[in-house]
Amino acid sequence: MNVERPSVTGDFCGDAADRNLVVIQRNPTSGSGRGAKQLLILISELRRLGYRVRLFGSRKRLDQFAADSAVQKQLRCLVAAGGDGTVSGLTSRFPKFPIATLPLGTENLMAGYLQIPRCGKSVAQMIHNLATTCLDTAFADDQRFLLMTSVGVDADVVRRLHYVRTGNIRRLSYVKPILQSFFGYGFPKLSVHAPDGELLGEGTHVIVTNIPAYGFRMSFSPQADPQDGLLDVRIFRQTGCFTTLIHALRTRFGFADKGSDVQRFTASEVEIRSAENDTPAQCDGDPAACCPLRISVAPTSMTMVVPENHQRSSATAG
Image: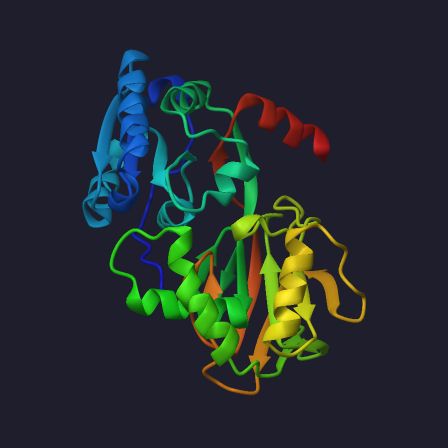
């Protein structure tokens, strides 16, 4: 899946006090129940603070609106009201503007990493304060990702779910495709190469991460740092559904990896190749191109609106 990239000619500069327009991209499948309430609170609180607010459910209509240079001069930030996919979509299309997030999706890993609550009032205050931090993103071929990309059994799960998905998903939606993949995936041999072609490692499952978070509270790469200009690469060497299940359970409950099972290193660019050309890949929970897949980091390419305490901790961590 290639990401649409409308041209954005303006740069985010000048006095932030003059930027009183907040544009919200709503994920229609994430805006029910408590989510709908928090979205309404966000809009109400922003208006109380003196901001003009535009809400869009259509990506196309938002893109057309934000392409106007007059709009760009007034734009304080864009808001992703949904899950990680909504954040990723805005970042890919508008990399020059700060992105805030109101976490409403099934998975909100970026919001969790940035310690952003599902609270419209808190997010409105963040936008008013406009504390920001710059994070790395990365590309799998030409598809931008924020969190991680992988080739292996989890990508097969994502592909199976994508084929049958008709609307919003819940964690229970993954049960059937997980069972199908664990007992139907062939575990082809994968190899990871440097840009010059040097072989860096081989296995049956490769995960390349940007932040230390993964779905279902897995912690495959706790050392990953989205501000170091590098990606964390993990190669799982073992084959078969049983060993994969054991490794997943060990990871879920915090046990250290066995050195013989997993190879880990950091890199700014790698290429993943497969013995089978149709081996699936996924980026941030969406299907990606099949192997061979070239993955590269784009340092400090995303500006996120964050709680002020996170901005301070990010600044002092370096």
